[in-house]
Image (tube, rainbow over all chains, first blue to last red; front, side, top):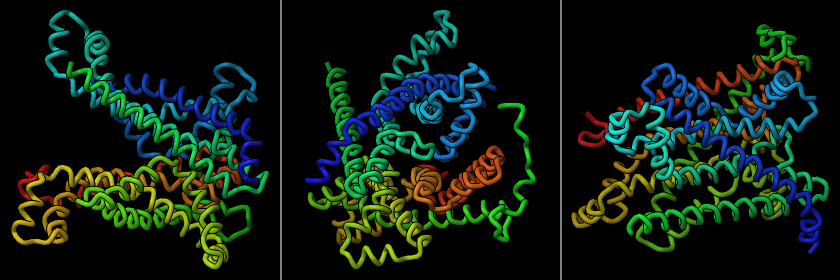
Length: 227
Length: 248
């Protein structure tokens, strides 16, 4: 069929797009969870200004559309890169801004998941840790967070799948991720219907496989805990 | 930010450079109007369809439950921008020719608004469905048995016993979803529909004052967010049942 032929001819370009999509997803999952954990610890810390900062950050990020966040960072990141590192503004600014935007944006969602995990760890543990002479940060890092993160793994991974789908919004800053590449191929070959359905099917397949994997992992964890 | 950027908050009151008799503020307001209409219309679709799907997913009938599950799997695992492009570029092509032509011959603004509303409505319905299912899941099974034992039909049991409680339980998550519709609606700027986010982009391009333009739009989204929360909080308090969660 012509359409299958057209898709197979564009596979290298589509694969490059998928690499961009996966790069943004991977970087933002890792950076987002790290910054999200920091935000969660701040939110629960006895130092009030830190708790306020974290609360305000999460509230602000969660009330702004992702499209606006991407536009903001595409506006600011080039100037920051130039100012901070003195790089030429021609470095791949789109990719860097997308990674920064997604990391900072998703951190707000990750922090809420991690906070729920932290609150599920019994309070006595924190008290016991401080009775042993640990500081708040030490107790968080060595005692509470390892348990909280483990409990939060399924929710964090599910949020990762949402993030994977959300990366398609980099369309608004013109970054050639998987979806943008599909649309470019469609415009070039006049195969809009086929390419959009193809892109949708690819996202659907990857997301379903990933959420299936999360379920298997969850079940495995449960049976492991029973032993 | 470089020291070269010149702030100019007066820009909103300047007449637009396209020659229309309007100011840049009028552009933003027109965008806001589109955003609000779009979000409210698609929320209505999402609520009706989502509740129907949620009931189907929990229905004591394998086929109905399977349809609900399929719907959610499909609409939650394809990115919203891909769904939007499918509505805009694919649906008019694969419908029977006369319907496709009818859609394509609509004025472009009507066409974009209608298709975007359908897209956001069906996308959000999948999420509403999950909240309704969770709400129905919190009810003890005995309630349905008790209701049918009293002689209510299954329909009546849902209508008078199960749904009134399940819907109330679902109000807090549905509030977040209502906020999400407003935020998700910004995606329609990608097909050229001039919503709030698109107008702020256009304003930035025409005036060279992106910071003012984006700040204004961002602020409006935050205010919308806050208004929705206040209203829904009122609703929640108004419909609260004595003896249930959240009641005093």
